[in-house]
Structures are given as C-alpha cells and as structure tokens.
Amino acid sequence: MKKDILSMTMEELTEEIVSLGLPKYRAGQIYRWLHKVGVQDFSEMTDLSLQLRNTLNDNFVIFSCNIEKKLISEYDSTVKYLFSLHDGEFVESVVMKYKYGYTVCVSSQVGCRMGCKFCASTLAGVVRNLYPSEILSQIYAAERDLGVRISHVVMMGMGEPLDNYENVLRFLRLISDDYGKNISMRHISLSTCGIVPKIYELAQLDLQLTLSVSLHAPNNEIRSAMMPVNRKWPVETLIEACRSYTEKTSRRISFEYALVAGQNDSPVCAKQLASLLHGMLCHINLIPVNEVRETGCRESSPADVKRFSDILSAKGYAVTVRRKLGSDINAACGQLRRNTIKNNQNRPENKEQS
Ligand code: SAH
Image (cartoon, rainbow, N blue to C red; front, side):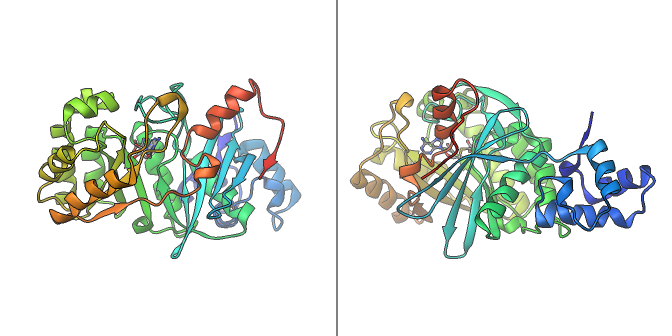
C-alpha cells in the first residue's frame, strides 16, 4: 500500500524520507512542491532526480482532485467544481470572490449521514470520510485551475466536519502550516450541525478559527423536524456547549439560520431565537433556504426575511442576511454531485464548462 503523502506533516514526511535512506533536506523540498506549489504528480517535482521521483512514486501516492465539471456563475463569477477522487467518488467545492480575497468552500465527506431535511448532500447518506489530503487538494486544484491565491476557507461543503474529526483537525494543521499555504486560522470557518461532544473537544484546542453552528430553529419541536441530529443533542444541550465554547475560546460563534417559508420564519421564532441566544458572544447569519427539489422546502419571502432580521437587530444582535452567490450553478453543496450521479450511473464522460 502506497502511503498518503499529502496527509503527512513536515515531521512525519521527514521521518519517512530518512527511513528511505535519503537526506533530511529532501523532505523540505518535497513538502514545498506538495503544499506550496500543489503538484498533482511526482513528475512535476522538476528539481529532483528521476531516480528520486521514481522512489517517491513507488512508496507514496498524492491524492489529488480531478476536475470533472466546472460551472461559472454568470452573475457573480462564483465557480463550482465537481471533483473526482482516486476511487471514482465525487465531491463539490465552491470558490467565491469577495472584496478581501478568494474564499473556498470545501467538503469534508462524500455525502453526509446527518439527514437534515432541507439539504441535498445528505439525501443518499454518507459514502466515506475524506482524508486530510483530499480536503487540501480541493484547494490546491482550485488555485491551480484559476491561477489565484485562496486566502479564506470555509468548511461548509458536503459532509459534517465534526463527524470526520481527526482528519479535519489534521487538515486544519496542514493548511495553516507555514511550510504550506499558511492560511491563518482566523481566515477559516468550520460549520457543524451540532455534534456536541466534539464542540467541547474543539474548545479545548483553543483554535482561532470561527465556529459556525447550523441552528436553523429556536426550539426542539421545529429543530428535530428539520435536523435529526437534534434528537440526540437537543437545543438546550447544544446552546450550553456553544456558551462554553465562547467562554473557553473568547471567539464568537456564528449561528446559521436557513429560513424556510412557514417552518421557522415567523416573528415568534425570531423572538424565541433572541431569548435562546441571550447574552452570548455571537453573530446570526440568516440564509433564505436554497430550494432543492427533493426536499420540498420553500424559501421565505424577502418581506419575511426582513421582518425576522429586524426583530433580531432590534434586540441588539449582529445579523446578516447571506448574499446568494452562484444560484444559477447549483452552488448549494450536494446538488451537483447528486445530479451527476443520477444522470450518469458511472463516471460522467462530459467535461463541461459553462
Ligand atoms: N454539516 C455542516 C456543514 C455543511 S452545510 C453543517 O451542518 O453545518 C453548510 C451550511 O449550509 C449549513 O448551515 C447547512 O445547514 C446549510 N444548508 C444545507 N442545505 C441548505 C439549503 N438547501 N439551503 C440553505 N442552507 C443549507
């Protein structure tokens, strides 16, 4: 079995290189090719001898992402990728351009097992976890393809990051490593549907990243109907974990709230939400739900979104209504993979760019 070289830290790679009888400094050279340049094949490491490249190829594999589909939004230049992995599975990533730079939204699993009722990623369950290398290579492949430097990362693609905890943590270490892309933790957001024990574990690490919590409802009745995870860790347990997280890390939590017409968008819900989060260091991000055909969820009207937002603002909360990017290209994660799998039982043959 060849080893997954892109998931190794600099120290681990150095050990591997030394154990192959090679000089230690080679590890630095190889690490730079892998993580600063983002090569997808050992043959691209042009300052290494052919013999060394062959040795690497015999012992290691670079798990890279190949572009199967690339869609570019006509409205806002958001780019959505469908990547294929070494075993033929697919994941999605999105690159968004903001004033402060390029942000990539990465996936952490193939599919998802959380079962949120409004979400396309989870409709067919989880296939497998992504390795740290496969999360990194979504970023490297996008940078390479677009010829840009990505400065911000959000873990809001397919999958539940805290359900793939060890690999995600290793990914975070590697992406913020100064030998690699050196993306500051302050430029990284991790979104969870609320795996409470992992929120406590994460708090202990005191990372400077932004934790986003997909709340979507102010009480157990509505939240359990929308998100099965709530039956295991109900609202009060989740909020207690969030309060403890902000106290431990002094970082404010960003609460995601997807507004679904007639389900969670009433003024009563807004008031309940305001009292639930009372006194907490937080930000509320309202998202008019992205309509996915199979889910039957309808987007709240702009007037209802405004009414909801106004109630929270009046109570003193920092509220934003998320701008919809890439709505013409299925940019809500999970939709492109799902459509592709449905349309082609095997691998899609058409490389498409629109
Ligand atoms: N599993 C993680 C991260 C992935 S989803 C989580 O649940 O947080 C990223 C965000 O998109 C989550 O807040 C999720 O609830 C939200 N989301 C999923 N489907 C959506 C849809 N159709 N419309 C709006 N938001 C959606």
